Length: 369
Ligand code: SF4
Ligand code: SF4
Image (cartoon, rainbow, N blue to C red; front, side, top):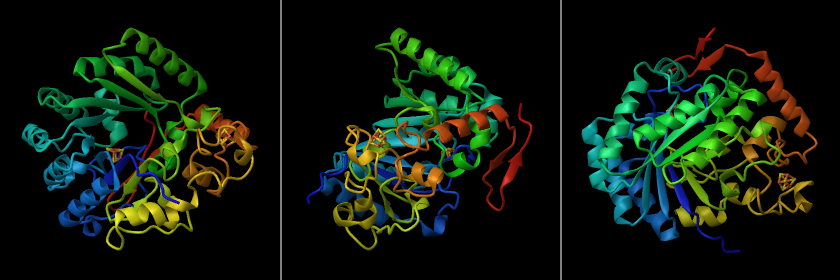
């Protein structure tokens, strides 16, 4: 079988990041700097991605600007006619870095904001002064003339400020705003009880986003991702396993999605051992849940099986202990009601305790209200 090429490469060039977002979806066990791919390997991987037919490269992490060779990688990708996007917290950037990246060919920046309230944002991100620095970076992105998206992750502690977040994105000059509910992987899963919004909060956010979409048509495009646990149908995670995206982690493992290492029993090939095209076509990890043949009931005979591709494998793993189950956020799954009840229970309990990632040990944040 010949598989269509992926649309995009998610290049996780480092797991290093000065922030410690309580919802970070990176693996709980991060790859250290000593295991990161070197520049020459990344340049070769970009060549292989272009040959494979990849159209876009998203430089991400961790914090991708922690790598000193980011400009070189961006320039190489641009020379290969790949569309280049930087997904960043912004906190390590100086203005000259950003203008150098623009000169190197960077076309698009996605800048994350944790909140509109500086204290709340710095608390969720675990880094003092982060919010102020992000506001500065936003101005430089606009001055450099790059396409600009604000990424806003919504949870129980900032859902009430989604209207302000929309206004902030307009004020900053963004063309697009991603209002994304926390995805419960990595640290997000660890801190789920702290982050889970109530259904009433979710309904209010949905109403505000829908009204703003009408009001701001032509000014700001708003993408909106509701929390899976309250959904009736799962998301088509990664556009379907092994269909649209290829993810390379800092150590060179090639993954169908960035949380795929949470699934036991999958074998991940590396770019050190194989060409990207070979991995895309033949890797065990990509073929394990590709298409529809792996699906159990109710997915196997469902009309939506080529729409959502059975939902998210990592979420099925996290919630059922079996990655080959129907994503239990689907209302057709026998486990759907228990997932919804779990969300309501955790949101209703209102825990104020959360855990930060730490270099040596985790630290606990209490009584945040
Ligand atoms: S979510 Fe926060 S901690 Fe995780 S990589 Fe992004 S900025 Fe860093
Ligand atoms: S049963 Fe499977 S294919 Fe059908 S809607 Fe649910 S997750 Fe999607």
